[in-house]
Image (cartoon, rainbow, N blue to C red; front, side):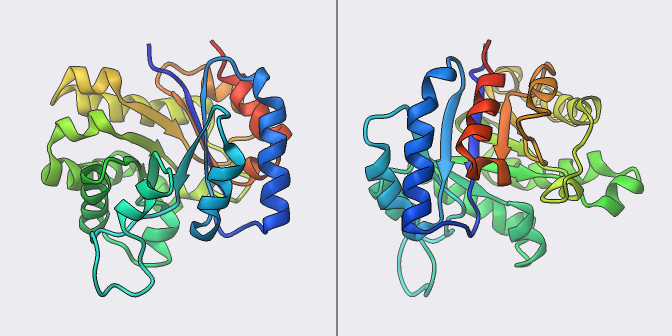
Amino acid sequence: MRQPLVAGNWKMNGSLDSITALVEGLKAGLDSVTTAEMAVCPPFVYIPTVASLIGDASISLGAQDVSDQEAGAHTGEIAPGMLTDTGCKYAIVGHSERRSIYGESDAFTASKFAAARKAGLVPILCVGELLEEREQGITEQVVSRQLGAVIDLEGIGALADAVIAYEPVWAIGTGKTATPDQAQDVHAYIRGKLAALDSAVADKVQILYGGSMNAGNAAELLAMADIDGGLIGGASLKPADFLAIGAAANR
């Protein structure tokens, strides 16, 4: 049975005071989460502080992005090894905001995925369609293309050491959420695509939902057979809401 993972993507939010209060609030309520692994992905500059605040609490640490380069003259980039040095377990790659706002291609995302794995990080690979792509009925083609770039570069076995997050772009930060059935359909498609190449990988890989999951809708989404957790945006900045999502994943 796959362990649920509930990962908070804080995006470009926080201050020393607010993240201290946030982590302390999470630690105080962790007893309510009995099954899911909880993880937080702060902005880069706060990763060491959050690592210190977490201490020995059962909260994993991740980064919101990672460079495809190991070191060198890459101004502004953060190497995978720097993230492992500061205690990170996870690194998000291919988030829709990186793809759409910063123009990161499928191939570039795949290279980041490869660099993260090489350094010992667990990539959280984001895939998902734009609103116009859903309306055109090409959701599966888009997701297949995004997954295919990673599989072509790294092989299907690489996904055994990764997490996939399906994030319909039209449901991120909009308050809109895919219905449980809509989300399950895409999650099942992803798992089926992987199973056609390697059934063991398909059975193992966690597939998260990342599109405005919150305390109110988490239980219904997490009840779906192929939804193994959530990649949470705004709700992860509120300890009570984030913990409620974690508790909704209890089995």
